[in-house]
Amino acid sequence: MPGPVLQDSTFRQIRDFIYGKCGIYVADVKKYLIENRLAHVLQEKDLHSYEEYLAFIQNGCNGRDLARLYDAITTNETFFFREPQHLDLLIDTVLRGPLSQRRAQGLKIWCAACSTGEEPYTLRMALIEKAPSLNVAIVGSDISETVLESARRGVFTSYSVRNVAPPYLKKYFTVNGHQYELSRTVRDSVKFLNVNLMDEKAMRTVRDNDVIFCRNVLIYFDDKAKQKAVSLLYDCLKPGGYLYIGASESLHNVTRAFKPHVTNKVVVYQRS
Ligand SMILES: C[S@@+](CC[C@H](N)C(=O)[O-])C[C@H]1O[C@@H](n2cnc3c(N)ncnc32)[C@H](O)[C@@H]1O
Image (cartoon, rainbow, N blue to C red; front, side, top):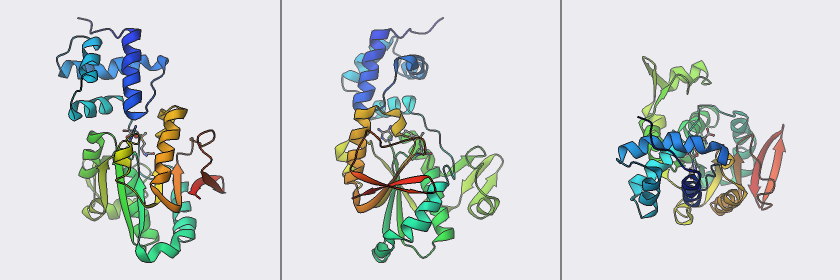
């Protein structure tokens, strides 16, 4: 029997609801994505139409149901040592350079929207290897509770570790069939939190960072949502702190509050 059909007007209302909650803008051409991904949620909730689902979320569904919606609509692609040019820049110029005066009191790095944790864990391994004397606290966060649970578990696929150099694989992972379990020392050295980049109250809990990585998430936002997220991220940095965004992303037309620094074509944005 064919499943429920998502009418255009219902799609637009679900799209607006999602946008209002988390800034993700689902273009008309991606209607199929909402239809496919929410079909499972309808089944789970024993709802028979998207109209029923819309009424359900609009009429104050609980946090778990919202979390289920975020799980269904977010794209969580990530892997270890993604965009490694940022790592070299972080360690060689930023942490050993301008931020090094602050090393005595310890530095704080926040990976906002870190999905299943490969990004903050990569930073931790690179820091252990290349700057072992630096005292750096690392926090990872995401809007999806499912990816955060996976991050805390610390067990990864061969796809996820494909860019990990053999010495790091040997030192930091235990191979179990097709699974790669990260060492407890690395897992325990990153704290994970659920933070929605659109939620001002939640964002206030992650203040005073020296460095923020917020990579490959702004691409899912429209300009207005990008402006809001970036302005909140600005407030979460200490003066002089640095923001890294994805290599394919830009703050052009989003804000002029940051000073861009370009080294070997790699950009990092500094809070003035
Ligand atoms: C493509 S992944 C990027 C992961 C990692 N930063 C990287 O570059 O490999 C994007 C992540 O952003 C998260 N996300 C989407 N909207 C968000 C929001 N409003 N607040 C926090 N996280 C969000 C998604 O759940 C997803 O895990």
